[in-house]
Length: 142
Picture 1 (cartoon, rainbow, N blue to C red):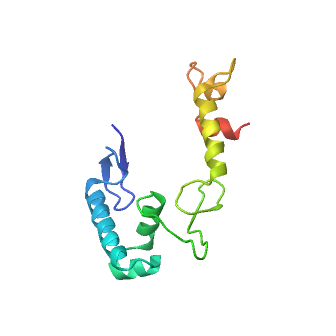
Picture 2: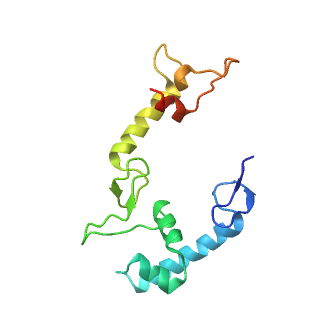
């Protein structure tokens, strides 16, 4: 059982499949349908127009883009709306750029599987023989 605070309203809830509480998840779905209906009648629009017309926050629209629930098409101007969460290069509809995806894939597969003769997670222990370093701590110490 994992309990956390909802990033939208701050309420404490148990995570089932979404990082939003049930009430905010319902509101999120309603907002997504609202945006979808707006986009059907206003195909070529901007984020600021979506925000103004529907009474939403830009933060919510960007989160829906980042979560790939909305997809931005910026062919004409080649404008990149989002940035890679690791290196900050511009990306269109992803969390990571292709280079960072490849790096993270290789890194995580090495950390999960370990190398021959080398324990996974860098081999650091907490004094009781149990792994004590997180994936990221082990990575940054190299």
